[in-house]
Image 1 (cartoon, helix red, strand yellow):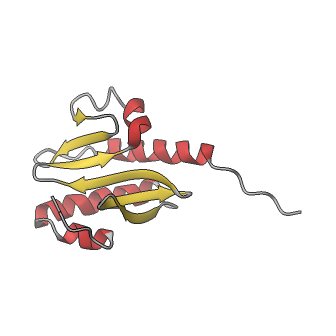
Image 2 (spheres, rainbow, N blue to C red):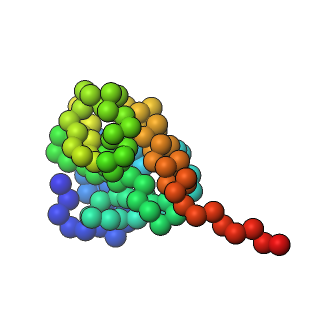
Length: 127
């Protein structure tokens, strides 16, 4: 795990071995594709995406897994599909030595995107 807090996601990813960098970059790309209006940042020392100023998802690299943080609501909504993975209240561990569940990651991000969009105030229409 990276102990220094990187300034951006590129610098975060560069701190990992090449095989992990490829996975992390693909996770990043999947999130961007699934939530194109989200904004990248570093939060809690790891890559984060926000939408309308609210946390969308986080991810991080570890020795034997990729941590994916969809907040409690993302985990609750996909409990059955996450049954084969180690999970916490808002965390998911995808083992590095297994195929990443790209479609599931995409579904979770889209779910969180829709959840935030529904809760966000709508802009006032100009007359």
